[in-house]
Length: 80
Image (cartoon, rainbow, N blue to C red; front, side):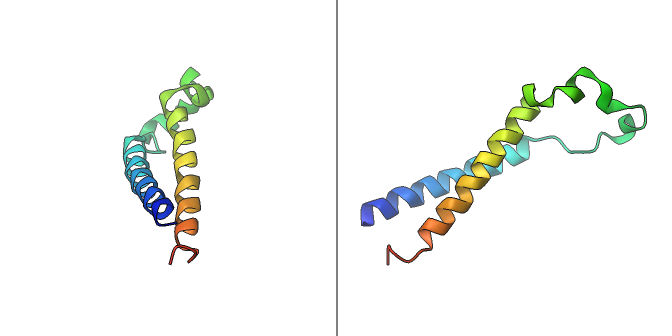
């Protein structure tokens, strides 16, 4: 069980670093004055899922779920 705890802790640390890096790579939600002129009606505004920003959002969600699951498993107390 000790080896499993070490492996999960290493995965948790890596996930923390990845999650931090991904959040820092994302752009802000507001586009400033571009919103006044209908900035969301552009090609990239309609197809965010296929852009770099859309991929970052998906990867952020996966990393966040992994973070919560690993944190819960590591705090169950079965490794004590």
